[in-house]
Image (cartoon, rainbow, N blue to C red; front, top):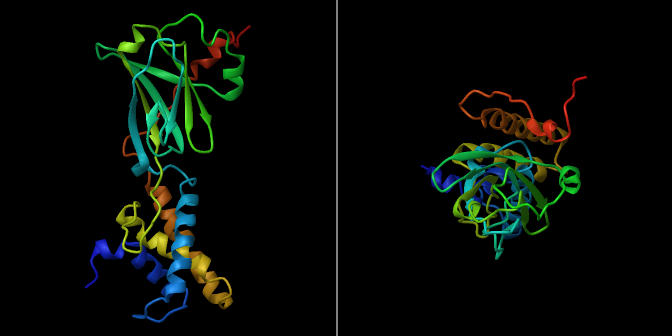
Length: 240
């Protein structure tokens, strides 16, 4: 009997995908060329899927120690702010002072950051952050620029990390086990190009079905609520 761990490897997913696409029979083994092509396609698909919705299993609360009069903290391989695999995006942030008090940090857009006055003057406790997305790292700007008191606290950023690419066929997927069917059918949809129309349509249908189910399931258990965006106060009121 196939174990879950084996089923969740690159080899298991690729083999199932070729079988789903009708390119090999039940119990058959893909050729070395098929395995190599399947591995590349699987990695490309996983990288793309990370842009579909929010994958809760990829969220991580990372800590950055602010430095006095330093407002820029790059995150990525070999970066000074945080040496880590480049996060795909920052979801939220908060500042925790030395006594444990937590203050929410509000994100700002490119335009808001450009228009922000005195970016490096008037040090204080940060209340805003701006994410500068670069090819190999994410840079995070803090405003106001941290003062000596803020440097005794910590900045926490909830980031979306990256799914690790498969290197070997025996590597286990970073996606949880419940995503295996979606991965296998998603890959089967790509591999089925050139197959009979009925096979391509079936693979596309199953791929969409499994991925949609998982995207709809990938939500927090706590109820969602909305709050007023306080950034409007930076530009004046909206009432006459």
